[in-house]
Image (cartoon, rainbow, N blue to C red; front, side):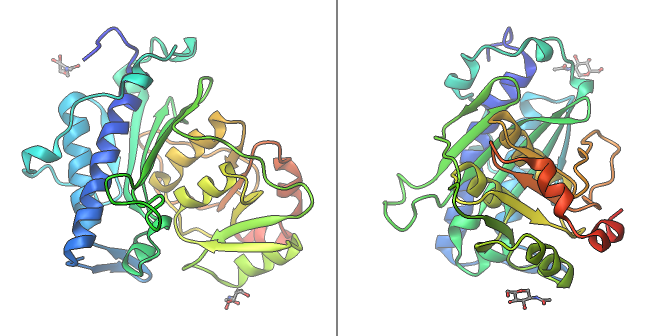
Length: 308
Ligand SMILES: *[C@@H]1O[C@H](CO)[C@@H](O)[C@H](O)[C@H]1NC(C)=O
Ligand SMILES: *[C@@H]1O[C@H](CO)[C@@H](O)[C@H](O)[C@H]1NC(C)=O
């Protein structure tokens, strides 16, 4: 591998191929039809696809970066994985990019990789396949700066399985690849929020914005994709249910194209090694060109107090 390329770029380049491989595993398990669903907690499912995709990502990245802190949603054990699940080649387009100066000299100790092998598990089991993403987020000194979002079922209703799926990446200060950004409409307000974890506080908050439309979809990765595709202006989740591995990659990619993701008070989350995993103060993300602070101001007072 190109050892002279800075660590952050190499990591993104490796994550693009590993996430794409994990996506193939997710599709293969679905087509075999044996999902192996277990309930981790209330409203919290895990399938054979979550477990296998995580083992693929963990094994592929830790083989190439043995001293790096990698945190995965499923707490991935380091047991044996089939050799064809370990991919160590890199995306050459990413490797050929110019690394922003601020990331040239970072070392292993500054980096934490956050993996959600299958974001949108409930939707995966229910056949809402385009809600599913594979997320690899890269934090440097506690900030979400790099990310890969792989959507294994992108275009699944219109193309054959070899052409299905897409992988996009972003690095703050550099930009994004694998994706064409669009702006949301200017004459109406579209919000996106949780599909499976709705509650009164979520509904109260959405009502305060008087939206023209609310898209209730699964997955943090998928919701941020909607912001980048111009299909929604803001992603609002005033609840504690989402974790650092759900938001690290989406935050980095969204920030890289000029959007923003914070807690509902407008404050950034930290992604260093010792941080608590739940995003206890909710999630508020806005598309590029949308005034984030005006959304923060409209969150109802009682909701802010409940998530302080
Ligand atoms: C990992 O850390 C060990 C012990 O500090 C060191 O000997 C080794 O060279 C490191 N490996 C890499 C690939 O950085
Ligand atoms: C929130 O609003 C949605 C859509 O109107 C509705 O289906 C759901 O039952 C509401 N949830 C609660 C807890 O009120």
